[in-house]
Length: 140
Image 1: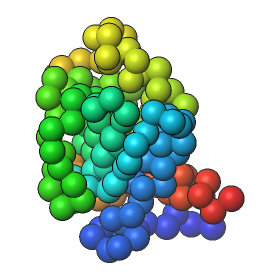
Image 2: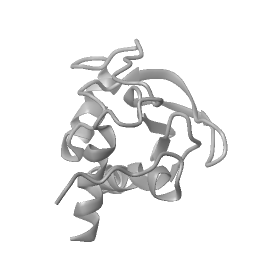
Image 3: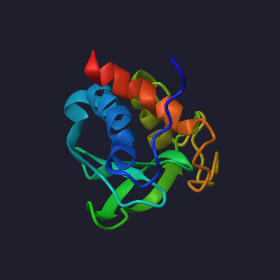
Image 4: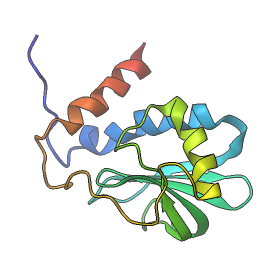
């Protein structure tokens, strides 16, 4: 079986991150009040947390946590006092809750500086293959 690439900007490509983000939502459990996929370029998602904070993921810099200001499915989410969780673009979902705790405390791998792990313009750099592994989990 060969490697299957998903064509950029198709509906399937746009939806790829949702399977990963849904695993993070599961890991966070009752701490989540809502979540949605955000706009494209880069692909993004927002998880609203109880208490007024939010997590935002994008395909260039990974996860960041901050106080939710605004945003929805059509507009980018704005956060105050954002801290990037570190750990790469796709840290294991079960590790995200502890990284959120560290970011709130300003310790661990969290930082106010935005990392850039990749560009959303690099369509065939292997990142979509990593996202596909979460699609396989959803189908199990």
